[in-house]
Length: 77
Image 1 (spheres, rainbow, N blue to C red):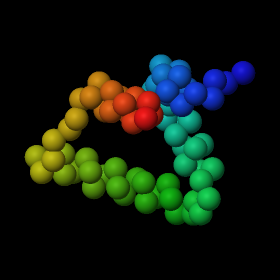
Image 2 (cartoon, rainbow, N blue to C red):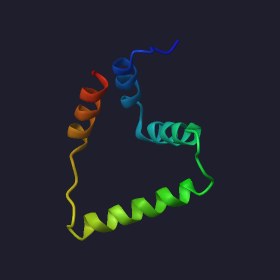
Image 3 (cartoon, one colour):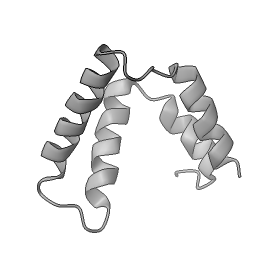
Image 4 (cartoon, rainbow, N blue to C red):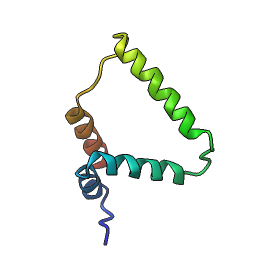
């Protein structure tokens, strides 16, 4: 059975291999109301835009450990 405590669930999900987390993210996004057929193409364009901005030095990346810590902090609220 899946633990319904958001913080516990987040810890379990974040421990999954990256390919599994990516697939889960796709499934969750697809399950949201109003998801359009063009969403995958829009995400691809957004990823390209953000990657190019990162390569040009217009934005800086955030270490994954900081991102995950922030997610955990927000879920613990």
